[in-house]
Image (cartoon, rainbow, N blue to C red):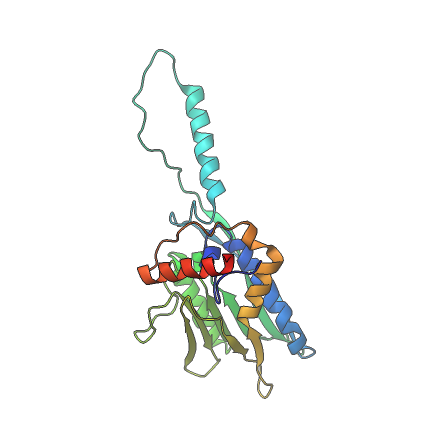
Length: 257
């Protein structure tokens, strides 16, 4: 069953996101390779960062929180003294430990010189929160200084945008392309109702751009993974306006009918 949404499916942003992130990165690479041969390669490089955000525990990593609480309660129970009655704590929370996050990034390199030409990043929640947000922005600047084209695909509503400008409309999703040495950034602001765009992927001059149909890639990933089997579309989502909530319900009902 396909996703009921014409563009990004907001139900993919929570517990399924890590799987979506990995699968979509692989799918985009598969779309690119036939266009890049024989002058360029596309490789999935995996970067490891630590997520210390309390906002993500229980959303992206629910098992971590559950296991920590179960372990604590088991230890407390074994230490209780039968002749001493203590006042139970009304609330128990786990001590947040860093969660290791593996982030795949598509790197396009020139075969002849192995020079990095273009970089495609699907943003992770850890990229959009401190302390990793500042470090991510520094890495982006280093890529620009190294004359590397950068595509950033932000399909997550939560967190702080890695790139802000007063002219960017208030939309949930954003795709950006920074061409090396251009001094400008191309943007595709996306609402819930928008289809994900077909975007250019710059290469070295005078080679023409490759192209990526982001919506087609996401649709294939959704179908191949069977995400509909893991999503409860009867649950309401937070963070949307009343108009968006009504549109979401209508969109889901259309598919069910």
